[in-house]
Amino acid sequence: IQSQRDVMARLKNSIADALMNYKTDELSVYIKDGNVYVSLAEKLLFKSGSDVVDPKGKEALKTLAQVLKGTQDITVMIEGHTDNVPIKTKLFKDNWDLSTARATSIVRILTKDNGFDSNRINASGRSEFHPVQTNETAEGRAGNRRTEVILSPDMKELYKILYQ
Image (cartoon, helix red, strand yellow):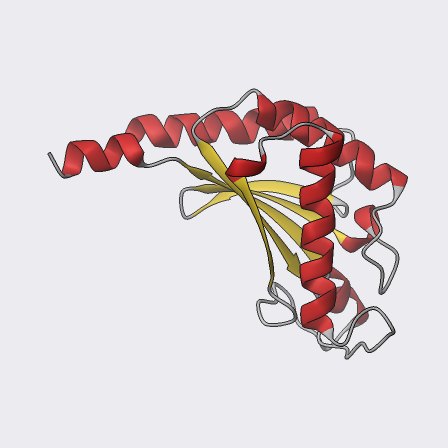
């Protein structure tokens, strides 16, 4: 278990170092529940109501992909999050659609554009249902519009030890 903690701490530090040129209101890197989280703000990645990643966001994702490709024994989940302001466009029926489409866009950039292993990544949309700030203020809503890259350790070795 301590070995896994050490691996995840080193991974967090590697990612934080690689992404240090970005502002704290654009992205943050932290460990929670044994996973490394890279939380990317909407303003870094997308225009409002869009799932098309901006050039600055593509650069951040390219840097992240370079670190991830050199790391074995992790899985990657991309979670899209929105605020609670309803959306309805020709492309997106609601915030579920938008959050999922954004996560899928990130997966494509990491895999197709930057060569990360498609077998080790998945996408999900969480819509407005996991806010990290209040939706009562513009600043809070902005904080909730994010995409999280969640890096989880591969626990196969630990399971082998526990269930032998």
